[in-house]
Length: 148
Image (cartoon, rainbow, N blue to C red; front, side):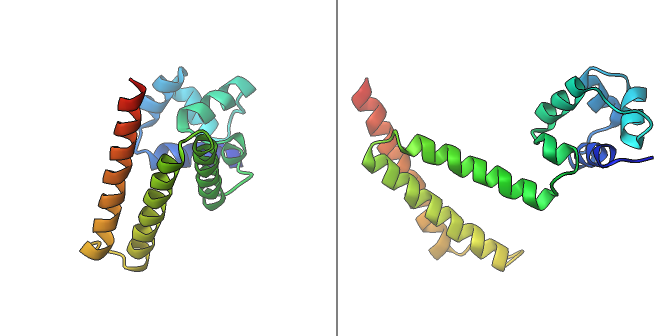
C-alpha cells in the first residue's frame, strides 16, 4: 500500500530523472529495498528519512507528504530570502543597495517571463538586470580590494 512517504520518495526520484539503481546506490541501500520503500511494502527508519531529506534537499514535512510541492517551493524561497536578509544585515550600505537592485530587477524579469511564456526577455527588461549585476560585481570587487 503506497503511503505519502512512498509517493513523494518516488516523485523526487522521477523529478531528477534518476533510476532506482542510481538513487539506491547514492543512498547506500539496495535497489530492492528502495523499491519496497517506494511501493509502500516497507517503512524506513528515521535515519533513512533524514538521509533522503539531505539527499534530495527537502524538508521532512515535504518527504512525509505534510506539505505539497507548491508550499515546499514557497518555503524554499522564504528560507532563501531569510538567509539573504541575514547576510544583508552584515553588508556595507552600498553593497546592500546593490543587492536590492539585483533582486528587484531579477524579480521584474521573472514576472515578465511568467506573464509571457515562451517569449524572450525584451532588451528594456534584460539590460537593467545585467547592469545591476555588473554594478554588484563592481561593488563586491571594490570591497574585496579594500579589504586586502
